[in-house]
Length: 328
Ligand SMILES: Cc1cc2nc3c(=O)[nH]c(=O)nc-3n(C[C@H](O)[C@H](O)[C@H](O)COP(=O)(O)O)c2cc1C
Image (spheres, rainbow, N blue to C red):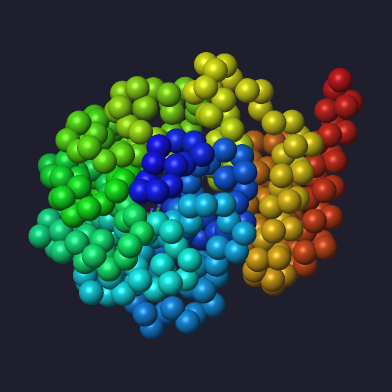
């Protein structure tokens, strides 16, 4: 799949997830087969640009191309400024978020709340496309609520405004994360526009990825929650799509090694204090479903230093390995 001048290494995209898809996680997912990884949302409020958090979110040092940065907001001029600011700071693709139902975002009429006002959608998209000379992409839900699935109409507006790819989460804004994602509206959207469409929502297995691509005709799939603690899901899906065969789950040693690499990158990126805290949720995702993981998670959340966190994590994985050897 292409977005403007960029040919993606695969048609598997890591979904933007605030607080999760930082540079260390994006790099890991790209190494394991994600063709694109959109970085967390950067506020369009320029007062926040100097903050440590915003600066870190826009840090792409060493990141595999293309570097895509997401922005959100409801004011066309501010959004245009935010897009320019991010391009000046190295963004190669600007992604606009009209797909996130978070209250914080919706109360200022950004994210998926915007889908209600198609005139404003058009003004924002046109302003951002005119402001930068890099491709602009858009992420939406299927509509405002199940009675107003106006995704196809928003998609048409997006295409006319010059948007170069469209990611669609198969839920409405009102659905939050409830129920199952539906892919019929994504199929209609794909049939409505000529730009690449990326299908998103509840894709958690290689089989589901293949079925969603077949059902929707979408050009790519976007994976969010299923990649938490399982960055190798991109490798698994890529292999299945290419060969029709399922790869074996990674062994305990490989999971341990990937997690260790991930931890080192988190400490380097955030510094020890914040790195240790951010690492907790990742450690807990990686260990989910493993033997004795509840007790391990409880203990790891109390550890304060990087050395202790590494030692406790190693010890836990060693215990999994020795149990496996005993069982063998
Ligand atoms: C913790 C979390 C944070 C998210 N943050 C964003 C965000 O900043 N921008 C956005 O467009 N979507 C955000 N989303 C939505 C995801 O990108 C994705 O559309 C959604 O999780 C559905 O995909 P999934 O079923 O593969 O997780 C977030 C989702 C989660 C779980």
